[in-house]
Length: 386
Image 1 (cartoon, rainbow, N blue to C red):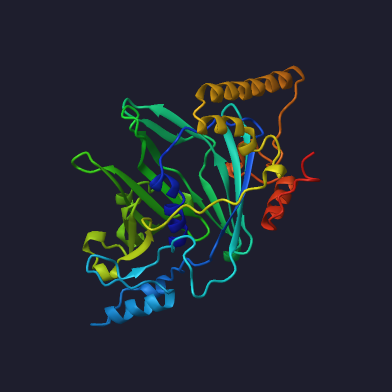
Image 2: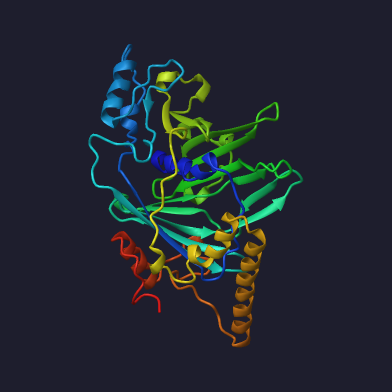
């Protein structure tokens, strides 16, 4: 669970480090694919090595042992945690660097009204897959835009093949896009994110605290990991969880450094040497995507489909960008009219489901072939898409 939470805290790195921008209106059947390559250098989180010692004077040696076992960095500052389990900066050289892991990603716009896209991520070498439907709803609140998951967005479903196919469901909190009137857009997060694993009967609640008592944005999370009953999942707030069910607590600014401690004690009462850094965002950078060559992209691949709009924007030819965008959207509407006239039902190419299936879209055989080829750095779609 802790390693899944560590992933969760890194997945929005581009929003923590970069500036938000308005996305294009995806066209039905539009798709995108890419790879990432990275070292397998994130330290394992073994809570047995981090148990609070009971023998007097044994705290220091226990922490040192944990650091050695986990190859984690030992901190000397009194204000820092003793053991860091954060992910090293992408591309940081390692003395024991092995072969790079390859992660492949495929997404397709499966619905236009409402706009929904299905996605699938796979890393066969680690036996990890993730999938879900991406859909958002937005509401103007007066000073900002509140963004929530849409009705078909049930979160991210992560399956761990090497752990008896344990499945984790990660649901999205609310996001707020501010700075509309100042022209400097910023993202803050509020409300709750839930991570559940019915197989292990362990659940996490992450409370995103948007503002402090002076009204300033804190970008802080307070979290709890606890034992729960999947048949009676009634705990929705951190304070609802009884101490006897608590396994660990988390706290810290999600744009900087988040720590966790084992057991039910409130984080403010836990000694520094028993707080462990689960993620330090500050030194991390977004991993670069590996993309198909231009000549192997189909006309409805995102980069090629919207390439004319993007080029015009970069050239600051905004009128031309609008013209190209309007032409694309009108072509989309014309295709929809023809399908209606011919009483045709559109079906995705790479995914079995337009929406539904409990929020977990299955790949078609063509979708599986695309990801299998991507794992071999083969971007050809010959024999898959006509």
